[in-house]
Image (cartoon, rainbow, N blue to C red; front, side, top):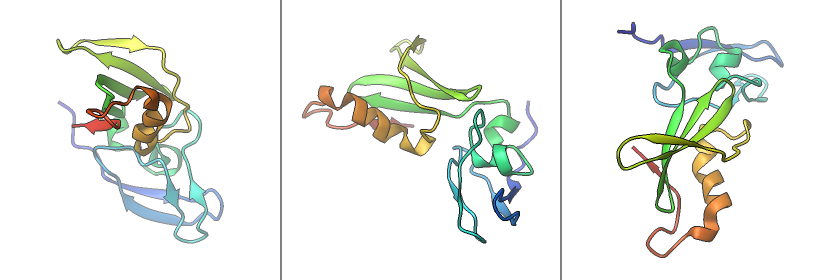
Length: 139
């Protein structure tokens, strides 16, 4: 069993070196952070899942607990899992039996976890139906 994740991290702005202690979410990666001093918008460095992994004193809880960030989606009737792993998004189809199959759907590394629903809605909107008019995040 893993020890509990550390939830406080000191973010250091690369622009002005201001340090702000923030509480990290336990169920998501924080892709954007505005420095409270100089107001520059921080984004993760290439290969990192969030701003805490790039600029924080402590890595994010999913990384601390050796998990990856992932999101389950209903993409117009198809259940999918989108997972951040080794600096890239991987996409899987989820079967009714619980098994997953890797599918080759390119998701840019610059897309944040919060933007995944809109991204999939944009690229698959042609298959929307009156019964399934939008991509939905699943619990």
